[in-house]
Length: 551
Image (cartoon, one colour):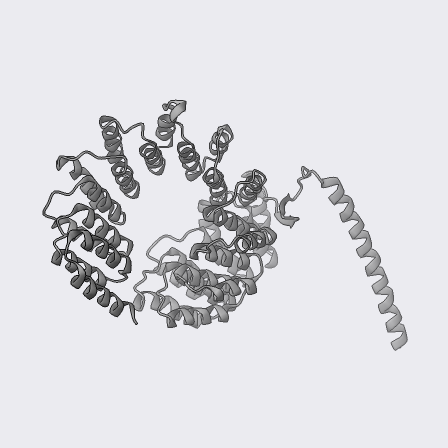
C-alpha cells in the first residue's frame, strides 16, 4: 500500500475512534509520525481542527515541529499567525527554530515574545542568536545579549555558548574572548571551551585555538574535532591529521564530524592509508554512514588515486544528493575520465536530480580535460536556459581554460571581454599557460600585466613568461624579466611533496634538511642512485652485445 493511501486509512480510522481528548492526542501523534508530504500535513491540520485540538499549544507545537522537519515552514508560520489563543513560550521557541531559513522573520518573532507579555527562556535566546548569525546583525546580537542580562540568563551554558558563537560569526572574536574570560571558572563548562576553540578555528586563528585547547582540563570529541576542522579548512591537512592521531592515542572515539574533517584532510594530502583506516573503522563498528560521510569517502578515494573505490562507494549508496553526484563527476574529471564524467551527468539528469553551480564547474572541467570544446559550450549555454543557473566567474574560468587548452585563444579572449565581472588570477593564469603552449608572447605579456597586479609575488607567473621569451629567442626580454624579479626580491617558491608511510604523512620541502630522518633518507637515496647507475650500465652492455650479434 502506498504511503498516501496508508495515511488516509490511518486518518479515517482515527476519526472514528476519537471520542475523548485523552484518545485524540495519541492518535494525532501517530498521524504526525506518518506525515511525509504536504497533503499529509493538510489532512493532519484538518484532523486537528475537526477534533477541536487547534486551541492546544502543545499540539500546535508538535504540529509546527513536524511541518518544519518536512520543509514546510511557511505553512507552519501561517498556522502560527492564525492561532487564536495566546501562544506560550514553547510554541514561540518552536516557531522561531522552524524559521531558521528565514532569519528576518525569526528575529521579528523573537522580538514579539516580550511584547506578548512572555519571558524568553534559555531556548529562546540561542534560536534568536542563530538568526542573528545568518544575518550577521551584530547590533541585534548585542541587544539580545543585553536581554540575557536583564532576564538573568547570562549565566546559562546554552545561552553563553550561543553568544560566543554569535560574536565569532560576526567577526567579533575579541568580544567572544572577553565574554569567555569574564566567566567564573565554575561556569566554564567544556561546552563553552569548545565554543571558544571553534570560534578561533572559524576565523583562522589556529595559534590561539591550539593554546586554548591545551589549557583545557576536560576535553571531548567536540574539542578535538573543532581543532581538526580548523586545520583542514585552513589548508593545513598535515597538522589536521596529526591532531586526529593524537585524539586516537587519547582513546577518544571519533564521531561523524571528526571523521568528515579527517577525510577532508586525507583528500587534500592523498593520504590513502588513513582514509582506508577510517572507512574500515566505520564498517567495523557498524557506524551509520550518512550521505555527507559517504560523499567524503568518494572525494577521498578519488583524490587519492582510487577512482574505482570511489565508484564502488557511490554505487552502493541508496540515497544520493546533488553533492554525491557532483563529487563523483568531479572525481572522474580529475582522473581524465571526461566522457565517463559526462555519462554520470546524464545519469544524474535521468533520475531528475537537479544540478547546482558546483556541478557545472565539474562538468566544464571534465570537458576541459578531454578537449570537448563544442560539448563544453553546449553545457555552458544550457546552464541558464534549462537550469536557470546564472554563470559565475568560476564557470567563465572553466570555459576560458577549455578554449585556451584547445588552442582557441582568440575565442577565449572574446569570452573574457564578455564577462560581467573582472577576471581573477586563475583566469589570467590559464591564458598565460596557454600562451606558453602556443607561443603567443603578446597574449602572455597581456596576461602577465594583470597577474603582476593580482599576484605580484607569484614567481611561477614570471617563470612561464620567461620560458615564452626563451622559446622565441627573445633574450633581451628574457633578461629584463629576470632582472625585474631580482630587483623586486621575488624568489622561486620551493617545491614540496608528501608521502604516507605507516599511516603517517611526511612533508618534504626542497632544500629543507630539518626532517628527523634526513641523514638516513639521504644515505638511502645515494644507494638508490648507485644501484640505478649500475643497472643502467648493465642494460647498456646488454644492448651493445645485442647490436654486435645483429651485425
